[in-house]
Length: 215
Image (cartoon, rainbow, N blue to C red; front, side, top):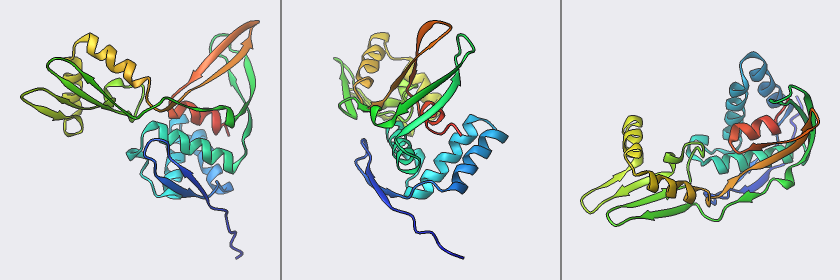
């Protein structure tokens, strides 16, 4: 049987700074993603894509920040199918079907850093780019006082929640502001339905999956 030689591409991840190699999607992989969505849910299709990317790059998706995962999705989509895409969705406000065109090159990396500190008189909080931007507390790497230093990843999920919820509201607000400066991807879809100008903001990896791999 003939063996098809696929081109090999390289990309540098914006957060980890690692350079990874990958090959474009093939028809079988595209069908697997579509089948997972049809027989399961959007989440199943998303997880199938992550497994494919992990196989192609040798990178554990769970070890990467959400920003690096989105970067890989954008690059894979661009190299596999093209930079231009047309897709449609149902407006959540009017239930009208909306068609849009997107150029992947218009989706730009935002932010300026991947680490930050929040310092108070009696506490130092080290922040790192979160694995999930929808969960601000996942950006907390450590909390240090004059008597103790706690590394968040060593705690159970319940302990993380309990400790983060014990922080003063003003400190959590400062953490939220710092996180806004971290490297991230967002994209605003502007459209009109029912005669009204509307907009939807995409920010999570699953949001971008819905846009990029609407099969």
